[in-house]
Amino acid sequence: MTRIAFIGLGNMGGPMAANLATAGHEVHVFDLVPAAIAAAVAAGARAATDAAAAVAGAEVVISMLPASRHVEALYLGDDGLLARIPSGALVVDCSTIAPAAARKVAEAAAARGLRMIDAPVSGGTAGAQAGTLTFIVGGSVEALDRARPLLEAMGRNIFHMGEAGAGQVAKLCNNMALGVIMAATGEALALGVAHGLDPKALSQMMAVSTSRSWATEVCNPWPGVLEAAPASRGYSGGFGNDLMLKDLGLAAEAAMAAGTPVPLGELARNLYAFNSAAGNGGLDFSSVVTLGQRRD
Ligand code: NAD
Image: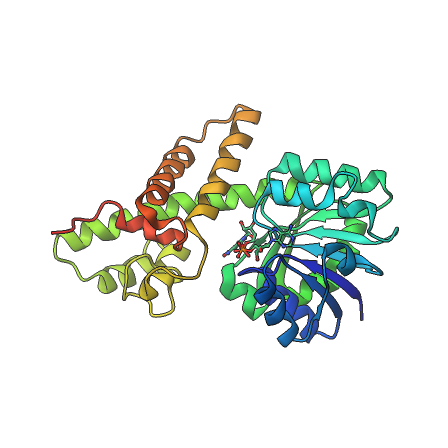
């Protein structure tokens, strides 16, 4: 049993904290939204009044926040958590953030004698609930080994990509490809439907042909093709368009930093920006398929 502080109980963090509690760990939780804390408590976690109270006595601190600025604000500065986390504790940030921000926080943690890994995830809300996430890790091998039993309570696959920030770089590579593939899949389905094809039959063919992907098989963007996909429930739940937009922005920054061309990633970033401007920012990112559809 490990005493864990878990900060950030949204679509992903909520079920992840619940899985740690179910595995028998003592999980002290905090979120800015009281209802999120209440849901975690109902799943076996213990409520903390604030983040500082959550980390008191913690052996491992886990965070699952939206973006770089939230993670930096939580950990850094005179009032930041790094100054309050017990020495010897391990910090695991599972948020998807800029690699440079991950390195900055990891360096600040090391300066305080704390070990830290970046461990962004893949697998979506369904994976978070089922405990089948993939963890994509940057940091030292020994810090990862300490975290491993906890990651295994929340996920199925763990990939160690290198030193601090490497997990974030790999995560951005994955999501950039995903953003492009989802947009391309939606475009292909829209073309088929415009020619009178049944989107279900077209998807079934594509799912066993050369364009097969998670976008056709698991999160199909066309309503009614897959009952469990966000598209079949008005694009609610799932992975928000604006989170994909954030990740593609991070990928673009990383590409500029390395001088690497990512023309398709940049095009996809603009498609998700249009989708956000169309009022779909809070919907699942597969709603990008609705952009080019005729309304008559
Ligand atoms: P979310 O917006 O549902 O949850 C974020 C939570 O953090 C919210 O409950 C918010 O209140 C809380 N929060 C923000 N600042 C806080 C603070 N200072 N202290 C305490 N709580 C704070 O987001 P999510 O979907 O859970 O995603 C979290 C991260 O995981 C993001 O970086 C996202 O890119 C990544 N991610 C999401 C998915 C997905 O399918 N949703 C999949 C993989 C990775």
